[in-house]
Each structure stands twice: as C-alpha cells, then as structure tokens.
Length: 278
Image 1: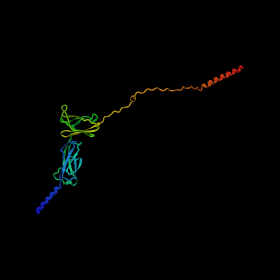
Image 2: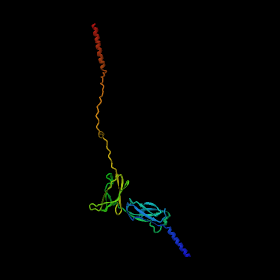
Image 3: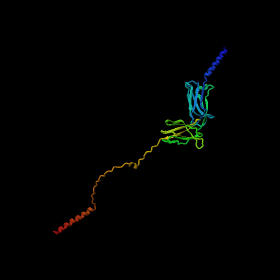
C-alpha cells in the first residue's frame, strides 16, 4: 500500500509539473534582404489573455534593440507580427519572445523563444537613372538597371499618395554592350501630384526602393502689358467746339497820364485862341 501511495504521489507531482509548464514557439525567415518586412509567427499553450513581448534587436556581443511589439494571446493560441527592416545595416539580428510576469519561469524545455536572422543588404544593386523629380503629364517614368540581373526581369511595386498605382508586377530587363546588368524602363501615367514610392525585387527577394516626387503642370499666367490693353479699336468721335473769349487789352498805368495831358493842353489852347479873337 505504501508503494502504491508513493507512486500515485509521484504521478500527481509530474502531472502538476507538466500542467504548470507552457510551450512557446516562434518562427521567422533565417535570411532576409534589408528593407524587406520580417514576418514572425508563433504558437503557445499559454492561456488566452497572456501578453508576450516580441523584441527585434541586433545579435552580437552588444545587442541594440531595433523595436518591440507586444502580443496578447487569443483563444486560438496563435500570433504573428511584422518588423520593418528598412534603413538597417546588413548583419546578424535576432527576435526574442519574452512572456510578461511569472510566465517567464513557466516555459517548458522544448520552447523556442529566440530566432537568429541574417539581413543581407542588396540596395547597392539598384541603379535608378530616370529623374527623381518629374512633372505631369510626363510622369511617371522609371528607368535604371539591376546589377548582374541579366534578362531575368525585375518586380516593381509603386505606391502613390492615393494608394497603389502599379504592380507588384514583373517588367523585362535586358543587357547592353556585353554587360550582365539588367536594364529596365516602365512608364506609369499618373495624374495626382505627390510622392511615389517604387519598390524593387527579384526571384531572390527584396532589392531596394526609390521615391519619386511628382508635381502638377505649371500653367503660365499671362502678363498684361500696355500693348495688351490696347487690343481693341477705339470708336472715332466728333470733337466739340471750344468757346473762347477775346481778351480786352487793359491800358497800362503809364499810358493813361500821357493821353490826359495831351487832351488837356488841346482844350486849353482852344480856349485861349477863342478868347484872343474876341
């Protein structure tokens, strides 16, 4: 009886121990081009409502966190998140799942909570030769070449200010002058001014992206000149006669005494002569 009781006790301890341990497993690509989204999926036996922090950081002697995303476990016990890698340097990185609270001490030994990723920088393969600033209606012209792409083609995806305007779709590449570089050219008519982001990829994955600034056509404003205001023919009119008054000469002050003296002398002489004749 004592042996049976001991066995039952050991089984109960094992059952309790197994019940208190939770499985948490994450997965993601082992290799990824810089700039491509990094998808991380996971599954767990943690109860619904448990929160897990997913940390994305550089891997090495010195670890620098790039970003962190919290996930709350739902009823289906599955989750997925996406980390951005645009602007990062090529190298080794890691994603780690960290349960909050006491659940960190309740992980089973078969859990996988860390994944290592190699980011490969391929942006130097992309060479865009068309102008990055363009004007409607000649926009949008995307031209350039992919180093060593040959005739394999390149996948292009263009997002504008109002959403997707092209792709993702493969466009042809062609070699020139014996080189293995793959040249491409694609005209995408757009009517909305703003920024257009073009992403490039191939069968291996993401290569890089380029932003084009598109402006509306500038309508010239006519300049009004003197000649421009005289573009009509004036109607001839008959001029009205102008009435003028003839000015009356005004005698000067110096002339008035002279005439008075002469007149007075004449009258005096006449009177004296008349008097003498009597």
